[in-house]
Length: 248
Ligand SMILES: [Zn+2]
Image (cartoon, rainbow, N blue to C red; front, side, top):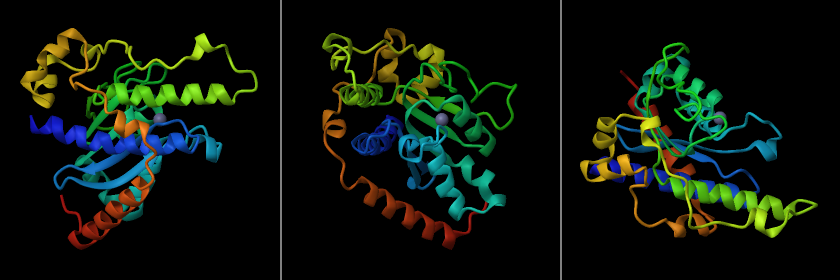
């Protein structure tokens, strides 16, 4: 199905940015914001908590700030309705809530966030009726193993830097085993099939990833040019929106 390919293409970009973050000593969590009707990248973000020493400098907020630069406050809600966020790790509860209040259209993520996930793993901020904002649909598991591997690289790296490295066995890098993904925690079978395609259905029940090979090329190589590419895309989108004057 075409939509699945669109998701893969954009998540690959987010993963490249995640790799870039990793090489700068940041937790490798990254995202891009895509204007769905035109398929344009309008913003990007990566985790910046270590450099900024701010626990809340999550990838999503960097992207939201970029969008605010070229979309006026009155237009924000209309604008966000057409936006899909591609983020390598499930938004935390705080970010999930911010996205809901901004009225984001859709979220696609890779790995679940076991401790703080706000799109189904811990809480369902995106679709519950007790938090403020407009509910949005959220799709997990896109290039999930790649997102998990980036996190594993990070933890192994930080352990090597630690003054008292743990013993090898404790933190060895596992490239072969991944926990099952319980799709049913996040979405109904119909939504799964509509989004990813009928041919993927078995994975819904088997709790497996629907992509075949892990994209090692994307996560194992330094991504020197990704920021330039994203800046260029963002700049082009900014000009385009200025000319178009966003209307509902
Ligand atoms: Zn967050």
